Image 1: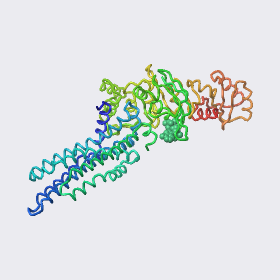
Image 2: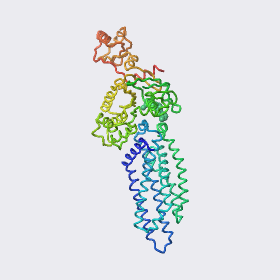
Image 3: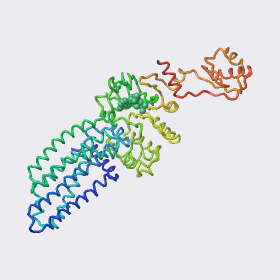
Length: 244
Length: 304
Ligand SMILES: Nc1ncnc2c1ncn2[C@@H]1O[C@H](COP(=O)(O)OP(=O)(O)O)[C@@H](O)[C@H]1O
Ligand SMILES: [Mg+2]
């Protein structure tokens, strides 16, 4: 399915991105910090006095999901922003567009190169979290995390959120020349996606499958829009004539 | 190799390239000469299938522009106005990436060939962001060549380089030009560069003003001019010289005479002799060199 040009572009994106401090911070330190928060909440849940209502425990644990939805939202940000502003700053788009790379390959390559690390790294840290949780707390608590709402959140909502982040920040970056400004604006633009999760976490004793699925559905629909919009911007003519 | 018919590109109300009719043969080095904003880059972008013409047609390397763009991109190489390299990546990584995009067979060999040809092999693993402008331009040239394009577009390849680097790049282009089947389309605003490298030159300012070999263009434009520097200008000298039958033009600029002649090799000796007879003390004689501005301004004036 992936042709050689698409693969070449993705590899190039990664070679470049992983030499960028902002990106490196986003894919290593940030997940570690989040993992730290998540484990901290786990410890709090464990340290609750026995007379505390059992829901409190679940609420604390469910709150940690917030971090794992935040990760696929934040990790791709810096990669996606740089994938656009980096090319603009280096004026490397024109030689790139002079090659047989198709407009669609260019767009898909950039999207995938940013979204894949976001999803994979957040899964990785979710795995780490599960590992740590099984050492620290009782099995029944760990199992709440492996229940359908969580699984849908991690394996369906996460990738959708990553795509949202990537397309939105690519759209914003294509309009802006300054990497830092593009990064900041993109960060604000993508945040609304996690607010529902945060609120569910506070309100619901148990995150419900319905709510997570609803959010996934909404993000999926929004994704279709942003993907179409961004794909339209990623055409040679547009890039060379309109982009600033 | 390149044929255009009425090729036009507008940006809103601005006509950047206006009804370009051009023919460039296989193996030819064609100079596209014009000042900033003349439409050179826009023309290259159209011919390399990067942006679409507003109207008109073109065939590049046998493929029709607009219908076979993907094939055109596969067989042309473009050296863009700025090198546009990935500064964090090494020279090797930069070239390898483009070799992949073009689907180059025996990639490693090809990358090695160009890195060696351009004396970059020893520095292949350094990030190109650390390279001097001249070296970066070399990497960019290698990148444009990595898939052995049949048509090579060079957009102001020496602009912004120091004279030494510019010479290196020019020498390399000269080498390339010797390869028989490679067609080179060279944009420049540097007349001497065009003169040295190109078989034919097209002068452009939105419209194609004139096309010809460098000699044809210069001959057509001026006849040629001789500059004579005198110690001082005797008062009756100008009048006396005007009687020379072959004189096409005569101007005095301080103690300097600027004389237009058809055939300076034959006529200069007579001219000098006459000056001496009329009491002029000659300090220097040289052929006047024409800058692009002169050629260009003259042509535009002629054109208007
Ligand atoms: N993307 C664009 N939008 C609007 N005008 C443009 C654009 N690109 C080029 N132009 C205009 O077209 C004209 C020709 O530009 P260009 O082809 O870059 O000239 P040259 O390469 O000869 O310096 C200029 O007046 C320039 O301002
Ligand atoms: Mg130009």
